[in-house]
Length: 472
Ligand code: ZN
Image (cartoon, rainbow, N blue to C red; front, top):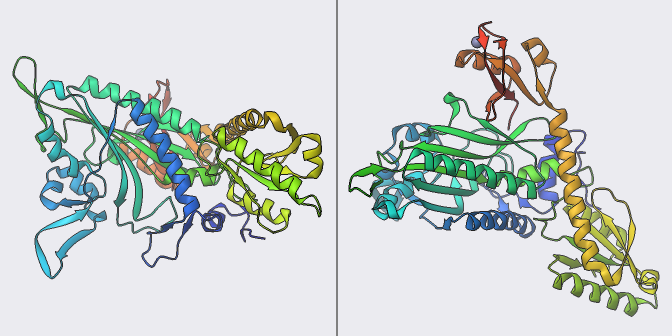
């Protein structure tokens, strides 16, 4: 039977590296480091996450686009901070066929510089605003740190929304809407999260400010799964994105972006799984319920027919169902589907058929119980909802238990997870705390939180809180 050599509870990072391949999400044997192969099961799971994102985007009046992968160097060079931030991570194309290119091209590390010269052609008048587009594409970054499937890769499955607005306030409203979108989406993935306003020295290259979306992994390291950026007019000036106002004057647009990546999958794998394997949130599980016929000699037809009928009923009720009729021992099937994180297992044998019931086993609790066959679709739908709720609550409890406020560095050193310390506002103090805690500065809470303390480094008055954690 397939199982990881390492238990999740023993060594999370090692277990993670094993489970992503064992559960058929990806294949890491491709000979370019950080460029993994999506296997069918993993790609379906990612596709279901993408579908939730698309639904959210479409419901909030964003239009899907698809820009070219290659960006001319002249486009890329227009915004100085941005070049500085991404320069070391860019893959360059210097040749086409036998010819050296007159102007180099780069593989998009993100698409601001591909899109914004074109936005300046699309936007003419205030009636063209707001412009709200998004794309789900692959981006490329030359990672030099140790790679890890879905978490740190060089070819990244990426979602990016880009918006243009008439002024700062309208762009601020978009940032607020992005937070609501993130909240709904992450709830469907059963992932509690925190928003942080990234520190000035670690915001996105070219942004006015950046809000990060972080999830706490079982290793108590945070994983940044997304970010929302307010650009103000930092990009619209170099890219000349202007519009004509009602009175005929010309103004620069204000812009925002919202990005997320396959790291969402890394969070789903890491947060919900247990020692037996994955536990997938029902909203994105490629298979929500697997039916396993329990065959006895002489009763094959009876059971197979009932299993097929049940499969048809669940399928037509919109439940992603799989009927596992392979000729292998049911126990081996249980292990295989547990490993892959299918939320519900349904067992059906001759006695169940006779009593018009089936046995349902939720992946997370393993508690068997009977449900009547005629009302199976409704029961299964309910069970999926309960399971999602349990996953969310369990992960929320972990976040709550590992979220601390501390007054001193001594106290902070004894804690693990996300730690808030009073902050004087001086970057050197925060950077010193990073060093002492061997962690990263996540940023400040978005909500107003009063602080009447002293900075644990310089002892000057501190009126703000700063969050720190070890992160991926
Ligand atoms: Zn200080």
